[in-house]
Length: 138
Length: 305
Image (cartoon, rainbow over the protein chains, first blue to last red):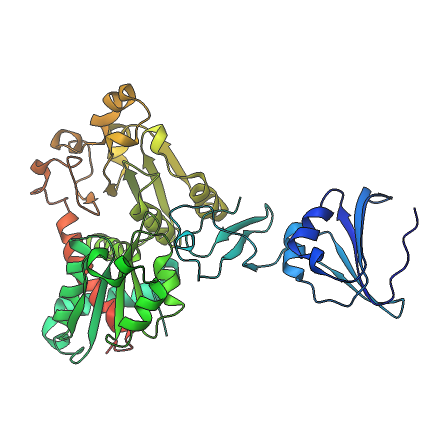
């Protein structure tokens, strides 16, 4: 299968196989007018298989969301068909308006004007807790 | 601007300062009697409370300030659907400091993001109650003359007890404290507190089902109420209920200098026959709560003197 190189844009590489649809949804990639290629189950020496997303437009993407979903992703920046930047992600310390608190007793479930903020409390086990009620994200 | 939302918002050094100011107030109340003249505290109680609201109000009055507020959500604009953020922005135009109790967890934290004046969390659902913890710490300091090197037993409902969680969190920052948790299996301390607060810091603790077994080892006994409806079955409740009621008989094997604390209100978990025992500290705790709230108000208003 052949997918053309992109000219100016972003390649999200080393996505854990199966995570690309989730990323597509979280980053609202369906709203873009440019070419977006979502490639699943690509053979990988390191990972066995992986997903890749190619976006043919230099858009701003939320690296916190990406890092939260899959901190193993590599973000490649392409300009004029040349790789000009490469970012390795890590779990973000804080996530704003990415997750919603499921604790029915939390103030954020009653007052929708509040930003939903989660903080990383245990990096090893990837635990995020609501900044307001400290309930663990699910 | 400082707020007090969680007990860990205060450093150990700041807690020591609050205790020290409280002791100065206790020794010389007169010299603090008009330090807050012209200042107002708003007590915004979206759910009922007797002790905590009156304690904040008495604290401000004894500092020479004045008090405004409401005692239930029904008598506030919350009943018309006003948000917490709008309420505190409005009240912040009238008062210099706000003490807030709210049934929703995290409401004081939300308020602190918008308030033009300091917010004190006076209890948010089953989550936090930092000024009760300050009252507990002042009581321990006054009774034991230290906040380290003792064995403390927490007895009763350790799963849902916000005062228990908060005090464990606060004490975990002091040296050489041994924790004994006494509860039925259904009401044990939540795993995340054992993991995040105790195991990670290498703090020793034991869990037992019966108070009688461990009472001789304790320097401090922190009692809480065990509610019948928390048990999964009636048989367990009947089997265990007496183990969580403190009666004079159980104190026979306790240390002579044991300190018995309870955040109150009690129902039947401490027999009234114990009230006159010199080891009973729960009413001193109430009084200490007022003094440490006085110290806290001074600190947050920048009037430490």
